[in-house]
Image 1 (cartoon, rainbow, N blue to C red):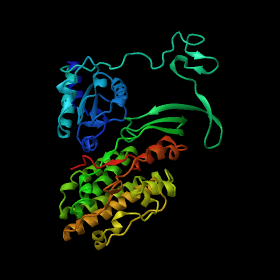
Image 2: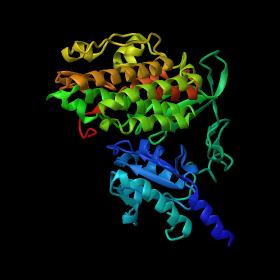
Image 3: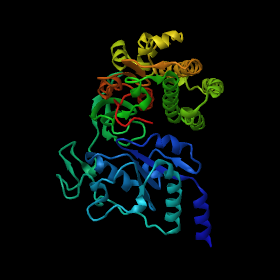
Image 4: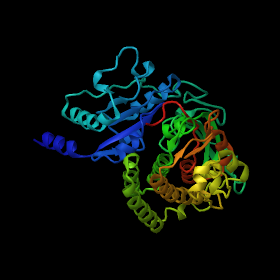
Amino acid sequence: MAVSLWQRLAARASVPVFVASGKDEPDEIQDMLWQTGRIKLVFTPRHASLLVVTGQIPVEQSQSLAIIHDQLPHPRATLWCGGQPCFEFIAAKRAPSPQTLVASAEDLPQRIKETQKQLLSGKRQSEPDLNPDRPPAPWQGKGDHGQGGEGMMGGKPYGRPMAMMEADLRDGLMLDALEFSVGPFYHGLPAGLMASVSLQGDVILKWQVESPPFPTALPSVFVRALHQDTPLADLEIWRVRVHLQRLARMMALDGLDCAAVRTLRLAGPLPCITQAGLGALQKQVGSLEKHLRKRGFFALGAGIGELDAQQANLMGGYVGRACGMQEDARSTSKPYQALGFTVSCQDKGDVQSRRLQLFAEVHQAIALAAKAGREEVMLTHEEIETPVGRLTKRQAPKDHSEMLQSLLPGMEWREALMTLASLPVAGATREGGWQ
């Protein structure tokens, strides 16, 4: 009776899910799961019961995925959506079960709930470990005294190296430094980004990029506008959507989960929005911005992650405009000029300025979409201003992860994550864009 009651209560609870994003991730899966009832996205595999792998995992990162898999507590299961299980992950002795493959993103929420019920009822067995149960740094019987240590501070005593002293970046005091690797599936980093990090307390001493993030696919409407007449309103509506999705991720990082879900619900139906709906959307975005000001969303980013002129010019897009640069491909386009477009800018170039800039561009894009829709304005241009930078027939927005090596040292960990969330670090690809 007690077990049956526990199973019924557990089946009604939210399903804790850890998402590992790969290449060519199906459109906006995580945003969809955020809005789905009885599914809770968690930021560490130790708090999850299901591992959801979206897109294709490169072979060289399959071992990292296997480590994450083994950190999930029992009972656990894995679902694959948008990609095939990599051979190294499922191991040679096991083939992927049809139960683990999800055909489309639309089916994923229901499959997650069904899989959780099967695990709790015992109809589906928990997945075994993929890696052998041994320490990453064997120490028994090694070293001068059989505990892994060598000399005064060498070796790895009991499997852990002794902390080495390094000068603090702020005042020069000698402090312990902790070195570790982060990524490629850490929620605070762009998918695919791996870095070697050295911390003193919570202050980043060094940041070395080991592998760049996966490129993101641009919405196909921006690519199409390079080659053929495209409704200008469509471009601006998609700009609103991408900016709102980025802002929602920043809100979630700041602990504003309800505001993040509210923002995603505004962004979700935008591709099908009518002209009448744009006026209501403008009011809803204004109400959201007012709410966030009261919650300190903008004030939290003041003075954090400031870019210099060279860095801002390199990134371009809304990042450059947040630093006061009047650079926007729309300013040279006659259809935009006819609509009265002017470049909107901030002046400080920190996280606060980038958040303000994104909201300013959302308001501006809604107004442009409404006016362009009424006048049925079409656009074809050799340079398109996308939500993440300038796009031409020869070049898409570039990867900027190398910049992090000079930008992040000296920041506290929280400040670094806020900075990363406010920047389009990953490069963009024109292949397989959103439809």
